Image (cartoon, rainbow, N blue to C red; front, side):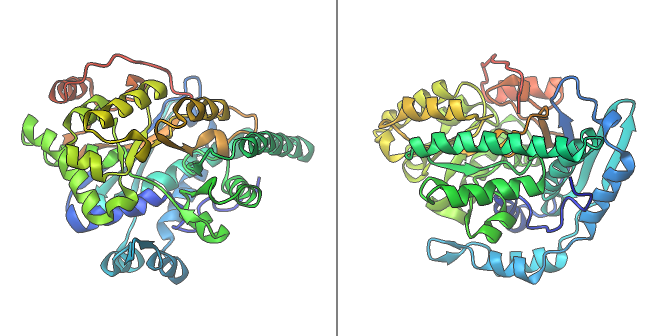
Length: 414
């Protein structure tokens, strides 16, 4: 594995960081947010494996990077409908004013404490860079003593696994998917290889694109993405003057998003405070005008069935709507979901870790999530409580606020 900077371009990030970043820039300036790394992988002591010196070098390098003219020109050319997706004021901010805030890094025994705090409009971008850095440093470290032959064997196994997936996808051409694998990829170079190979092997109406903006630019693909839990989490904390204000923040996110991106990006991420709240509090008008939903936790079959009933209850034909499944997908799961919902509701798949990190070594389940906004502790409930984030007392309060009654707990693989 090459010993060079892991992040070489600020465009080497997920598309939703930029779409969310624009909404934050225009509508939510001045919110102070704190993000923290969480390792959900049992038995992996990151502080014992990853060199503090190397991690600091990588993080410091990212802070020196700036969006270059080529990257800004590419973003300026992004179109939504007939309009420029990213407004000139926002592009000017990215090119001339964006400063990634300082990070906080501590090694406490075998634990690695990594946090980022600052104006939300600036600190929002750290998540993808930091996750990609921690993941790749982990693999560089555990493979550092491997011979060239052993590394070649590792790569050959990864190619074989990819070949098997491509074969299945060619046999099932109706399956539509997107690369969502930047955050927990094996390496930048491996994701580059995966994306390039898929673009060559599969038609564009099947492999729709990648969430990685730099790779989309390089390979002539569509940069694609939805939105993330942080929009709901941070707004809930920033608007928290009481239980009702927390609930109102949910609709604030929905409304601002649609104002900016309309039908094209109208995929609702439902599970931040439990998907049942979304189904019960989405208006008929929203159900009609939003393109679909993203499932990111819990039982995907149960979610899909609930979504179909949700649309039917509003007298909407589910076959006109879309679910993007994105929770720890593997090729077998994709096949099952595609076959189960075929002809009943449209499906697409945001394929992450198992696509860009399937070479044999153990995969990590790492996330960087907001934990505080304007001094208020933040919460994510999820449809799987293993993914919940927040202090116990805050989690219980949010369960009450959003009427959360779920008890599903399933250990996270990815």
